[in-house]
Amino acid sequence: MRIEILGTESLGVRGLCCSVRTRRAHIVMDPGLALGYRRKGLLPHPLQVAAGETVARAIVQHLATATDVVISHFHGDHIPLANANPFQLPLAEIAPLLRRPRLWGKDTLDEPAGFAARSRDIMTAAGQPIRRSQGRRETWLAFSEAMPHGAWDSGLGKVMMTRIEDEGEVFVHAADIQLLADAPVSVILDWQPTVLLVSGPPLYRRLHPAKIKAATRRVLRLARSIPCCIIDHHALRCGTGFKWLDQLRRETGGAVCCAADYMGVERQPWEAERSRLYADHPVAPDWHATYQRRPLKIPEQPSGHTDNFSSEKYHCTNNLNKKTSEHL
Image (cartoon, rainbow, N blue to C red; front, side):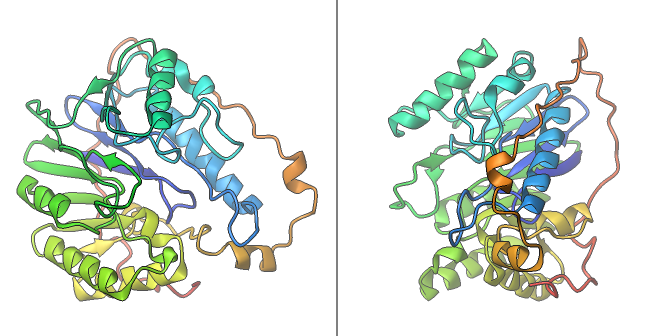
């Protein structure tokens, strides 16, 4: 199994997109991204815009050979959008890449009307339905029942977690559970992953200390059983989140890491550091007004699943000895 994390907060964007290659399939999870449109009154810095373009190109390259695409929920940083802003993934441009792979996703029967409309947009563009997946299990692929986006009373809808198994390895993608409820954590432990990718708590929203302590306990509970716990997304939209993560990394001997650490690349905390980016690298007043994103180059798709499988693996401990928070 080869797991590559394509886009999330420690890689410069919002989202939790990843690619999983097994001996039988190539699965792309949550093919979307976003940049916080305004933070502290500031639009995305050009350095973050460049990171977003890089992530978008990576998603396109992986979709070109995907056999399966999984959508955990229909928030704008997890899917391509029909009405994308300049910093999101435009559905119209990548539609040809959604016509061949199988599409899996949570249904929208109990979701706000806007999420149902986004689901219909994707199905129309793809020319095929999104398979209702929650609670479903294939021989190597399984999906959870609907889980809370954060706390049960968050009002942000529900999400679906995914389990992929291949030759004794198990990967779990747990988007936007935020570690704020026990039920999804229990399901994850029952699934016995060797690698977990999960959204951490939204510390940038100044959570109550009791909720942060409870989320921390859940991380430690997971790390006792899972060799590699990759925590990213909401938790890393502020410097406090990186410090929280690094403390857990030390406490667990490297079992906890962020996506950039796992991939062995330098952290790009641009969501957390927008103010500093503007201070260190001033932006021309008309930059955003004149910015035009380059159209995505859509590669030709192979007639079958010809993606070369590589056994190269990433690890939570790739950068364990680096000074990972010195820039925060």
